[in-house]
Length: 221
Image (cartoon, rainbow, N blue to C red; front, side):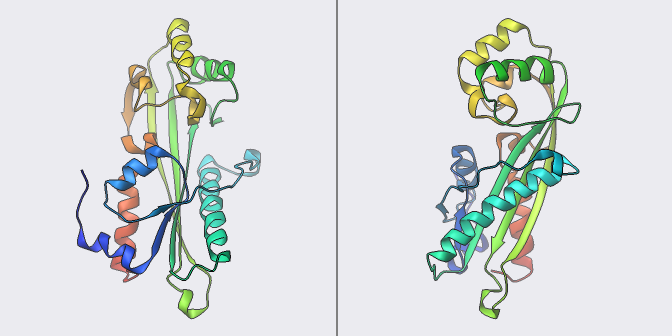
């Protein structure tokens, strides 16, 4: 099921819309807006040094920007004729003591993160969204760049070792920021959530919709 908004549909008449992510979760959520778009996963290595950033917000936003920029430049190098609107996104989990928790390096790493960083504590999920837009292309200028960060706090119940071990054994934590997927089996862990649920899934739908609304109101499509 998807929304049918004429002004959203007009987006594809103005731009080639590209999602710079291979995440099936982001694709599923974007599909609900009934937008015509292509998927071109970014090749950005996501190897930025976290200590160089004054905050996790700036770190996640830079990752999202680099992803969008990498895909935008690769498509422009292919001499794409259609104006581009490239969507970059990045999600990280930040522990209660401010440590950025991305995807675990191993099953043992996932266990330690769940037990020591998340169990009985409140973590913060941050998603950065960055749009590279060819609106000003005809004037010979650089692309317009719009960005935002969405924040959601998630409080875990205290988890016993057997529960953590059973969860890690499913393999689910291994490709998830913070070693958990709230929308799946980690639903049994969460005591409280404050903010956008879909941000925790990996794509803050309401914030993205507002960004598109702002572009539309400014006459960009």
